[in-house]
Image (tube, rainbow, N blue to C red):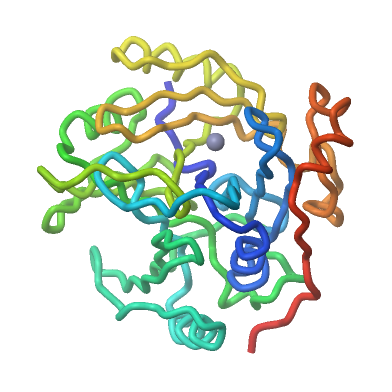
Length: 318
Ligand code: ZN
């Protein structure tokens, strides 16, 4: 069986949908590539952001729940999401974030690379990590950020855990990740490709409080697999490792299996196919409310229940 290549998408909870769109699409330059609903709760939007076409390893997704309480970071959850930027982009991001009222923290060094931390409007921790590594993605030319400064897909995630051993065993066992180093309480694992979305960091925080789920919390992280056949092999291997893995679920743009890793974080393995061009051409991605066939008959009721939001004209960052 092939080791897992890296991250496919990350799904989190937001509060206000307009603030979420303003921040990710207009400020970070992550194109809204799909507007649909939570298939398990169709009264809620499901927004997908990514590069121009939603390449796996760039996809950040949100359930905006207007009335949800703020979450609190803690153990058993993904506590930070990191994107890659090129070394020359650090100053640009400090200035662009500041111009838009977003306070970034001091630049830190982690495993020899600069890290610029800040938060999204719901308090979710984001990091921009400097790297020259390859990033096979499609830049959103019409977006606000020029190519040299643009985010180059996910660098990785940081999980906060009470214990790291059991989680590490799942990563390095059935998932095929490699341990590549430790820095203080941080243990880094790398997926098998040399491209985007490669890293999972485990932060050992024994005895610290568990996370409280809410706005700004990551709901789950998804790892990529090429197709249904390979996904079936992971499903079998993960079950053999004693994990409770769900049956395959049809998420329209990919097929998914889910399991909770021993540290409490919800993991998913999602297929690259069929992708986001399945029901919209590139130019129209994210501009229509798309529903899966089984929800289409309820479209009037669903549309009525969803709060309005708008995509504004793109302002190019200076
Ligand atoms: Zn997912």
